[in-house]
Image 1 (spheres, rainbow, N blue to C red):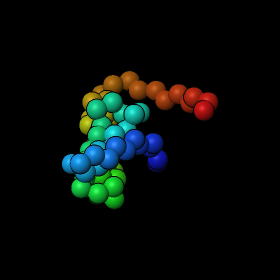
Image 2: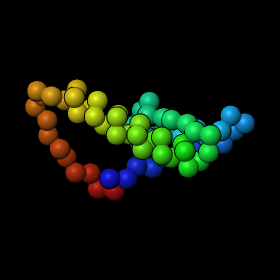
Image 3: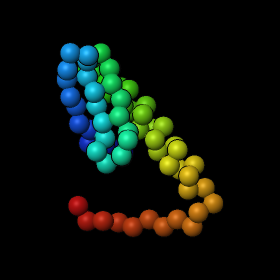
Length: 65
């Protein structure tokens, strides 16, 4: 699965966030570190989302791109 991420460089390092996953962001000293960290953040975000759906009547829908 792939997600688009946004990256911002500043004097403190690199911030990265996932516009499609509100509140999902991370940072790192380098771009490589920030991208590695956001992979972990996305996995944790999705795990929490799945936990919140336990016991719910869930459906999936397909949306044309």
